[in-house]
Picture 1: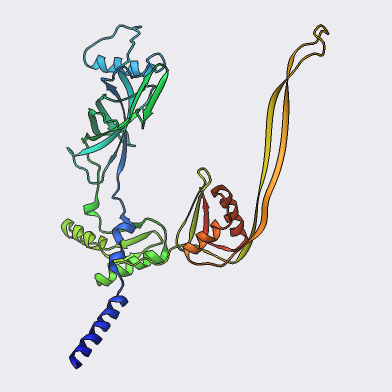
Picture 2: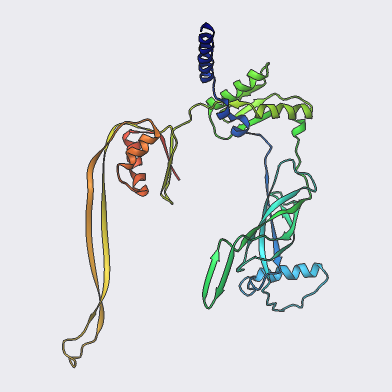
Length: 373
């Protein structure tokens, strides 16, 4: 009996210790909160031609640059087009090609590209992109693109009716470009490596620095500001790679972030995080509706031979309605579910909720940062 009591006590103690240990499974890693300074992708762009379309290409009379591009390409292939020739092309389209050159890309690597119509082509389905140089901001060629364009959309038309699913004037080519030039990078020769936080936060920068220093003694990290953490990495390349790999996998319990309410005035969407809280307040919300309607009335003369004319006279009606406006009590709440429930009780639409949140912020009963996009 005594043995069972000791086992029961130990199990209770072990369970309590498990509850007291932070759940690192839910912790975020440093790699999710930061990026290495200087290690980033570069945008590439190029102008090219897509051929092999089934009569859905550019209309050369409205997009003359397509014909000019074809003439220049044919001249490089040894084919001369007589001046003044009006080429009626239907199976060719001018396109813009964009891509992202990943960091540490080497010559010969394959990257994905996006092909978008530049003229008035109806569809790029079934087309093939001809060899297109891709340039960066320094006007240097870093990749060459070519391949069959993959279009996810579909469409059909007949008798003046048209049905279309998804986009037909833009597509992708997986591994459609080959890297020809490498971006200069002195990462291996840098004596200091910096981590850039995704969002500026002094407390998070200090927390990342403390987590790194707790694993590496001797002051391996120093927070420089709210956005940058300075690392003292090893000098040789392999040791530096291992050092960064270990640092990026360090779990971190992120402290409470700022309470925010994001309002999109274009779509009427309202998004708030779990730290938003409300103080007690009273809200009066009413809806004023003004309707203006206009109907056409026909006015005819009284007598058939009186010399008058039949005219159309507009008749305008205006009505104004004001409903609602009673005071609604909003209780203090710190839980997100209670905040949402309190706002829903107002019976306001998302567009009306934006005005209510702005007024609550000015009155001091909304404990959050209000950002309007």
